[in-house]
Length: 273
Image 1 (tube, rainbow, N blue to C red):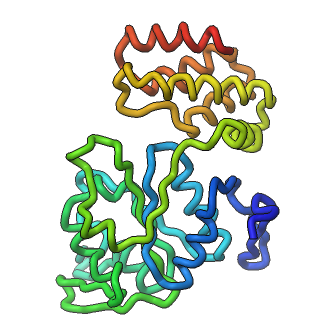
Image 2: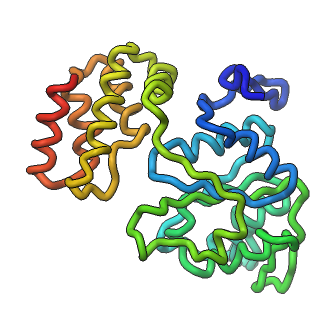
């Protein structure tokens, strides 16, 4: 099932669209496909930059389904997702939100960092994540049954602001859940090479830097080096920017504003690349 995944294409309107590059880490593709077939909601757990969004893009392409992504934040409300009345000329008309549209058309809806959204968002999706698979629109007084191809996918970072931005057990237990973490060193280097065409030797050095910083727990960093940051650094190196400078601006600077920690990390990185 997992052979030649990066070469898979999907034909839309007679145009072959290549799949987003994705390297499977475990059995996440198989689990997602079974979850989709059984009409189960899917939850991705893990730190930022570990490939959660790329995985969903890949799976939507693999299944040939439209993907709608909503990046949740503290102001994201159920109205933003479900829809609202708007004034158009002399009329007041109803405009479906991305959740309602996906429910009606059978798209995959991806709520990125769902724990960041307001509590009413969680309430709004509850009836979609159990046997009912329906959406109640209170402003219209209507209940919509989800299209048979609709799937709700969400992600969150369990370690981010622990205790403040957590999902309740009653919500987590409505999803099939898969944990994402940083790939093992060889796989992560392969990802950098395939994403950016950087030299393998340089990719390995970037991964070594990342793993070194990830193990420096005493620094108290809110987030550590993600694969996404390494891809950015690799792109800069591939474009001709000096390697140390690329690591400074793409890896170290995004991690912290503490000048002493920045200086210490820059010195560490300079020794490794």
